[in-house]
Image (cartoon, rainbow, N blue to C red; front, side, top):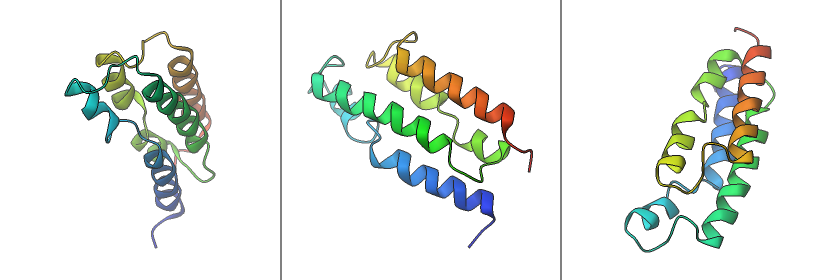
Length: 108
């Protein structure tokens, strides 16, 4: 079944992936079928940011587990495609939450 940390990581990944805009919607933006400013895409992305932040607070995550859940690569893609901006309040909040949780998490 895995270690408690691995189980916590898997739970967090499951929660995050359920509302992940990168899987389908971002492809539509890249193909030009949807604009980065599309209201529906914005709503999904806003919801996903909140969900990601909550998933990072999953009980049992260690620093190692949190490092595997680092939102930076996904945020970079969303910023690169202009779906989000670097100074977007949700981006700032998610980064701050991640940094705080990482600093407080047990090493192993």
